[in-house]
Length: 69
Length: 163
Image (cartoon, rainbow over all chains, first blue to last red; front, side, top):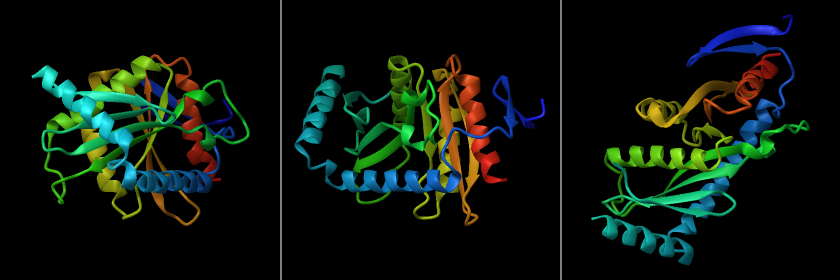
């Protein structure tokens, strides 16, 4: 196989790394998008605890916990 | 044994749980087909970014080690892959404070102590054009019908960059 670059062992599988073009975006773009996603998650997170939706979830979780014990 | 968790669903497939100390976490599986280039594949709809978020910590200091947190996250992953068995989750450690390697080590310790949940993790270190390295993991079920294609595609992210 002319495209073969490397072979790895992953669990019970052998993984072949080839020089074939990736279907993913270039690394710089992936890093930028992932960082943006994390930043967005942090912004959402700051207001999350006070939100009505999250307080409702907490009520449900606490009810589940008291039913369990 | 784990904390009870609640599946709130939504676009980001949100799960939530609260520890005995009142610390709240959310675990999200955010659709991430935006990471793909022009080429769309059969598994585009199954790509998710795996996110663990501390929503509330009443202690005002780092939470103490709580083994039930990791068993709860494992149970959540198991539940998600049961609901969506073709899912492929991408986990990239937060690098905003330069502590991505420490997070990766913690994540590895956690993952390898819960290997019985039927998923496999493939690790990759990607390096951007500025020379910064980021640990990236892909998690998928061993019986995922696209297993080989996905692992090959991830391997090729690095190959592309090293050209």
